[in-house]
Length: 178
Image 1 (cartoon, helix red, strand yellow):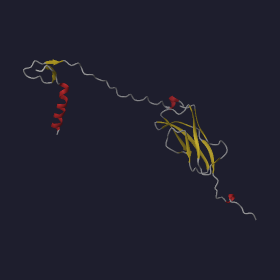
Image 2: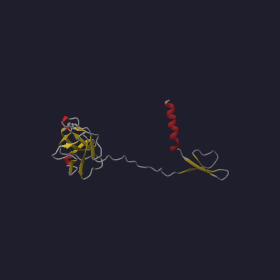
Image 3: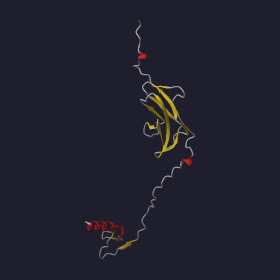
Image 4: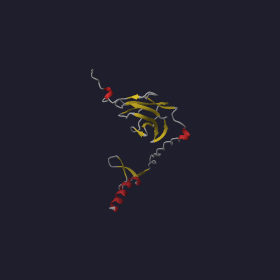
């Protein structure tokens, strides 16, 4: 098997090292060949050097600056859609929050919304997120900016209270008139 592979490689590389000859046949046609026929005056053809391309490997992207070098990549990063002091009324626990950034989200950066220390969805370039079935009570929400999976900036936590009214509550039942 090795001998066959070596022979195949030798045959394939032979044209690269072969010499080229030219002559005129009996009908007056110019013929090019790698083996001149016997008894015919053939001239060796001098070929120019082959064209080459100097292929450069792609350069690695510049490393991202560290947090200390870059400072904060965004002048402001805040959450919106959450009431400041009043409780958030969401009977089914569903509401939409948004991230506000200045400047807008840069290429290569992603956002991740974190509720009570738990990421609520995969990091993406979406600046809004619908939270579903959030339990009543107090919560802390933050938005994180990620670059290459690493947190590079985090908003201040927004503390808010979700108020969910239970529609089966006895206080909400209609009382019959006496």
